Length: 125
Image 1 (cartoon, one colour):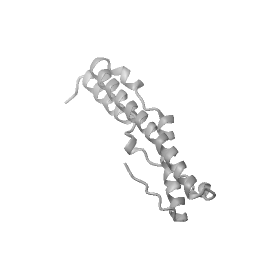
Image 2 (tube, rainbow, N blue to C red):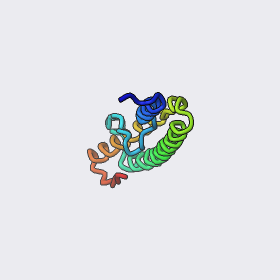
Image 3 (cartoon, one colour):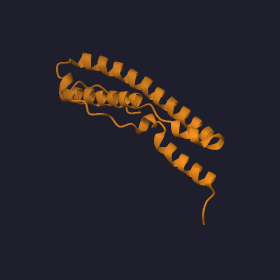
Image 4 (cartoon, one colour):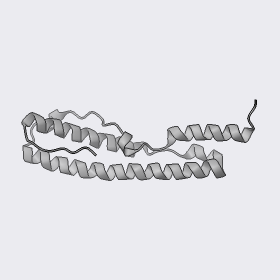
């Protein structure tokens, strides 16, 4: 059974879009950051740096999730209204990389804190 051209095109656009949309912030994996860079920090400095990085990561996560929502809306409209436009939808790789880096920094700060026995409590979202 052959599908009409519009159906095939819509299926191709939908599958391409699934891969092109921005990832959810919770799905972004942390980049590796060595805890060695935090060895010279005191426990107080580690705590302050953790707060700074955590705040930046929360902001980056919000931007990432907002981009994902925008991509999903454009994707839906593109597939329904004008499917060729769907090929121009894509996540922001720079923002995803920034979020991954910040997540990696938090892991490195946590590791340095554990090594120094600082007793800082790190909460996972």
